[in-house]
Length: 172
Image (cartoon, rainbow, N blue to C red; front, side, top):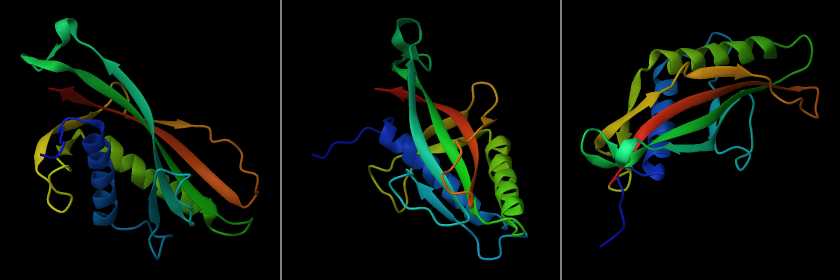
């Protein structure tokens, strides 16, 4: 018998990534992005292309409820996660990189703020057509925060950074 845990971190991060990829593809590209853009998961392990979005899961913390009972009768934890969503563009003065950077940031912000929840999928059973086994919610508080990005060594590489807060119920 193979191992499977529907409410684990593998399914939660995979569900987040899948939802983000599908919703970026489902929307029209911003006007300045004629050829689309790549979404890189787990940057810096995947090389960047420009323009692009890099999604890096930073981890999180488990929040226990009184008596470790969640959802009324289940034993488990609320897993609060933090994900870095960085938008990258390349260009020198006089090129449209700032427009690309801000339009992609607005597109990502719209997706994240407009979604109240996303399905938690069981990717252990199937990655092609996984079943929904729960929900992932954004928050607590504002689902995203614009934060200052560290300066890049190259003056022609530009970054807009957002931190996304989300949580799900991890139970046995």
